[in-house]
Image 1 (tube, rainbow, N blue to C red):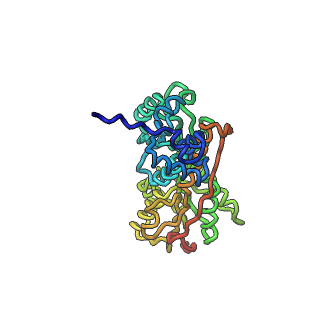
Image 2 (image 1 turned 180 degrees about the vertical axis):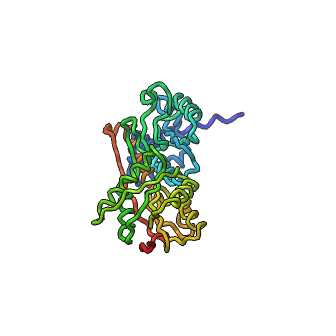
Image 3 (image 1 turned 90 degrees about the vertical axis):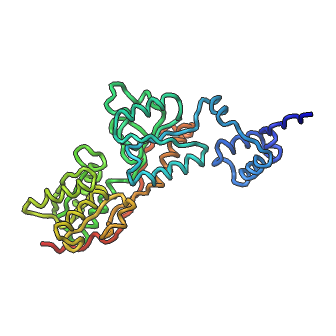
Length: 342
């Protein structure tokens, strides 16, 4: 004779064993951050003892939510991406959400593929690290076709959206003032190319830093492309001129690494002959010779705040557009020294 099938545990069983209401059990499962830790532990223990498994998919279908967020990035190889992703996932998981990653490699065709996927309702919200609304170049207005979104790192110039990033202007001003304090009066800003919003913001900070000096200092800008090769090329273009800088402020660390490599190839010592400062504090910055002085972005915190803002909006806790620019820290290492070159 076969045994009768074992009855599956219900949410009522969990609530009874934990000594809490059914609503509290549901809240502990879906929004654990809203439940006291002691209560959450009771519910967790009761779930383990009863073997209860919440049918999250069915719940989400009834609520017309996926409990997923898509992160659209131009490149998962970007050294800034892992730190931001850690923060995004930490906040998402704490609030019962999952994270999907869409890697575009800067290609419109890949953006289109991700947007078609997004149109199926697979994600409730979107985190943009691309610096533009998808799909770039599309004839229709993409804002009306997208779920709630937050831009990270690069503010969007074409739409009013939530944004979280480092305060590029204030941090760049601080970096420039540091070079000025070392006695440098010929400081060149190596940018990331015409129209690059981060390059322009950091150039604005550089100009403000120059303005703080009692002497009138020249605003000297030369373009790279954000890569180490672009940094090397910028140095070569400078060396065909009669006047050379004593210091380089590079809009990102990759550019600074290329500048240092080009200077050393020409037989110069950094920082004895030239000082070089970067921006971002990518993992490799502390491992080159000389170790790079740079601005450190609070990448984990940026990711956490971006996800919190997005989820607050999804859950109806906030309707106001948010713009948060977090403080960047000057990390002094070995690539800057007192001005000495004449």
